[in-house]
Length: 268
Image 1 (cartoon, rainbow, N blue to C red):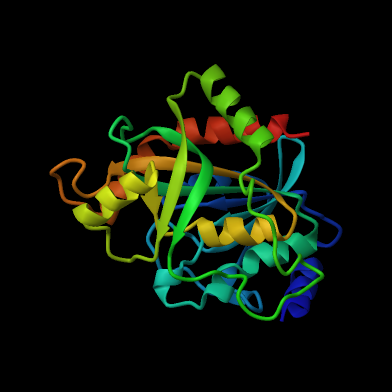
Image 2 (image 1 turned 180 degrees about the vertical axis):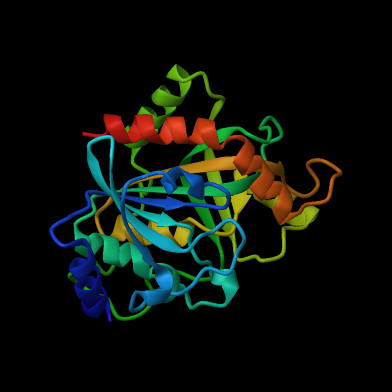
């Protein structure tokens, strides 16, 4: 299937070869709206699934961003939508085959760390996988990576420091922390959030970890950025909603765009 996908995409993009991959999370898809390039809907790409979640447009955008050739997932699909975990990470494997060396993964996340506020941007330093699945289970494709990949530094330290530095120069409130991934789609209970806090997590969400695992396995340098859109259950008494997530992401999207543009320009 992956070869069929590559052949289909290559016919569309011709000699364009992306070096950077970007996955845009809930409410953050506007980054790709005004870019000049080639847009391909997930619905027509062999092997791709469709995104059913508000805030995810569901298309690949091939464009040059600040001098770098990029392929951008304008929205992702999730494990909780009912897709097998291998389908969720399939686009990352396609990016690898297309030549991507650096993958920037973004998401909307709830804060577990009580010092974080909605609108903060958090550089992911590490993660805790509590989704109950690992996308590397199954037959190994040696053309992509090793059977037993090292996970000591999934999120590239140099890229993380670069993003932190760029954010501070822009005057943004930047955090660094551990991201915990749960399967969803229900939000976590207060007891679960307390458990995650004891485990050392600073933020929680329902994505990113599968993609980061596979990107690291494929030898890509990974940068993870969470937009803190709400406080997790039990941190504050307010009830949680996806509308709040999308609204907060929309409120900080200009800051997010500035950060992403700065980081892409600075990547060597």
